[in-house]
Image 1 (cartoon, rainbow, N blue to C red):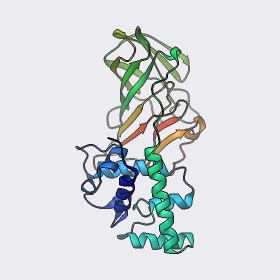
Image 2 (image 1 turned 60 degrees about the horizontal axis):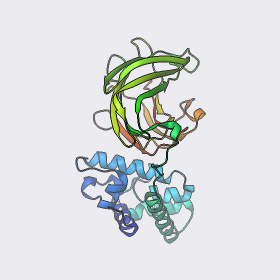
Image 3 (image 1 turned 135 degrees about the horizontal axis):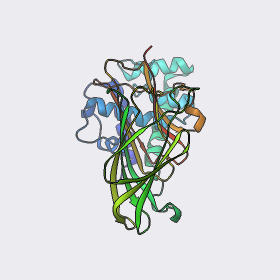
Image 4 (image 1 turned 135 degrees about the vertical axis):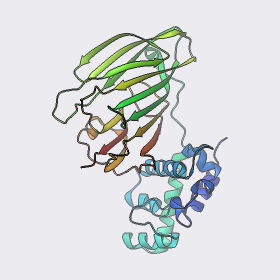
Length: 319
């Protein structure tokens, strides 16, 4: 159902009270409008809800002026330096930081929350028009990167949609960073799990792999099909601490889960979004750090990732 801007604004104001997003049992305090815009589902527990709220707010406020962004993060309990028990304390902290009165800060808070509402309710990019030459696009891309096994492995599931009749082949590609900043490009092992047959592969460049996949039957316009591949780094080959998806064609939704080795957890993990090609080369931490849950995993989602931009996570290994 459509989200009411008035309801969403009221739920955001309510969420600012008390400890904000840090409130224990947050899953019981999030209203239906926030649940819808943040992608919260019935099975999400408190920490999953907290993570989705944090991700959505950080992403939406990323382009705000710094004083407006802080006037959103601090009241919601999302600013690292303003983890106070009550909203009034966070407002007083923000007033000192911005050298303004509490009344001015509250106005900025309301303005920031209103900006969040506007971001949440802006029309989604159209998914109805695709250039005929593309033939198909990705409806959902779901990746699970496993770093707790003998070698890094990623299960990639894609649901594709035909944009014309008679689609019977899919081209799948991946570009890998070198294992070290100035090392030679590495290699990959790829296994089909289900849904397609591997009928051809090539390596157009040292870092780029291109696979030709045959579908079990031709798709007509509007029909969907899901397939899955397992991509592994060969044993003994290192992997740079980065997983970033660069859409080459329209993609409606990208979700990435990373399972770290609980005996070798990273020092820090950060979300990468709307990155340009060189933004991710030097592994410099981005502002939005990601907390690991109690079993050493992170879960991030990116609705409507843009072609030519990067989305995913990077991390700093311990030591």
